[in-house]
Length: 160
Image 1: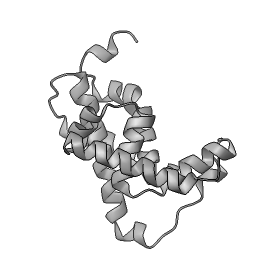
Image 2: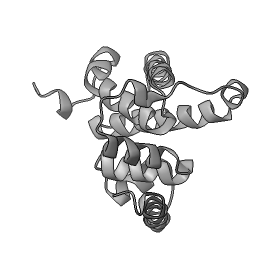
Image 3: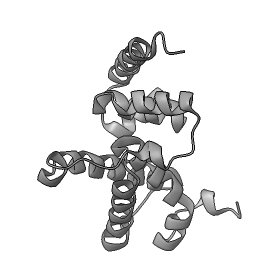
């Protein structure tokens, strides 16, 4: 990776390197590609405008994810979002029917469970890292993972 991941990146390099991660994270939380693209754009505009000082590449990535999660929360609080329905993303996302059903079930979870399930199982973060990213205790994250899995099991039971 040309040594890019072992130093703090410029905003342009960060867009190139972390752009897909930010977009996937936003999509995993808002379940709509157009909204996820808007959120990712806002995150990188904030990075460009604020130019925060980072301790290292891990801190930069954590800041980008935290900013993405916060933008997603703001998205759900907006009046516009509460009065509109997005397009069904299953029309354009190339997944098998089983994968689509699991993604739909994860997307239907309450936000606090969806966040930890997404960060742990899709992004591969440890519970300690998720706790730090979300500003929660590690035991809280573990409880939310267990409850999220239980809800998924209940939702998907009998379908697979």
